[in-house]
Length: 397
Image 1 (cartoon, rainbow, N blue to C red):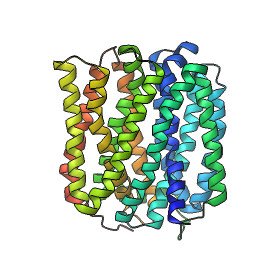
Image 2: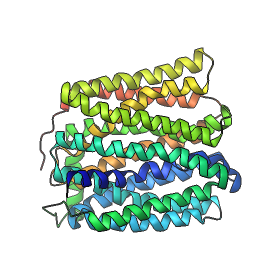
Image 3: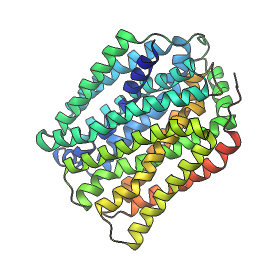
């Protein structure tokens, strides 16, 4: 496959995640009203999807090591499309949550395989650069999803917004079926053998390079998820913005994220991986401290909130491509399993954050400020210690 085609397919595949979350966020208040659901139950449409996404990766990763990336990606895309249709037709919140769980399982198949493709084709350093390019494409999708979702939700309701997810899934499935070529060269016939799976997972989690980059990915996604899961209620119900205005705010965040992925590639070339991560850690910490200062000592406003979040989102464009590529770097023969474990840990963090937010959202900005500050500290400490000590991968298989 041409390198540009690989980047396009990666962007579309991992783009399922922001499309599944960002596009419907502006419609959450309307969804809750239409289905007569509590804030806590509505949160489960997001946290349930991500928990299923995380757990399912533990199976999809070894499965793709055994049978290849292409069949797993296609299976996941078919299941994702069916579940997306089920979400549109859901008559109540319980059915919607169930379909979102299925959607998360399907998303796990596609994204786990896509991340493993990077290790199939590239060295860890090359993989970080390729992943940052793919995440620039992901950022473009994340940029257009919120305003599109806000526009559709505001004019025609959340079901129409979710219908656009079906269209995206169909397009991605068609392109993968048409152009994606198998990338795995050496399949592992014993990858699904339970003792083998346990041995490989043990090797993965014991590897210090994996732990450093997995914690980096986990904390970066925890910070982003804190913002995503609370943004609709904070901006619409606390700060009294419209769904379309929220969509444009989320789009601006995506532009900052895209900028972060471009900055990531520039810094990797000029100052190296360790210094790049250390600098991004400083930005993440600064974002959390700025939010706390605004909430505790100033007059909270939508503009102030957005400006305080920009450094975290910019740093996210650095943390994620390096973290995801670095976590699978030591495992060329078990990239699927390593990718799955990294993804699982990220989603466990997101699910735990979602549960905390479902009990903490109280009509103020305090939960958002506390969550971003917590993850900002975790990112800074990880960037300045573990990544500095174990940033160079030692091949484990």
